[in-house]
Image (cartoon, rainbow, N blue to C red; front, side, top):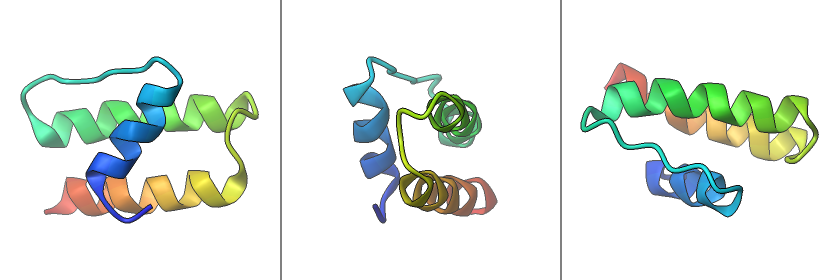
Length: 61
């Protein structure tokens, strides 16, 4: 998982679609959703970490 779009596809697999029109806001909401998936053990630790890295990179750019 290397791209913002990859994280979007991951969330879509679980029925989560986020679009606010602001990519930075989207990434912040997506980070929260990814954390929920990890907390409920729907995704493994490696996927969680990769998704967080992608989203945080997006928030700083």
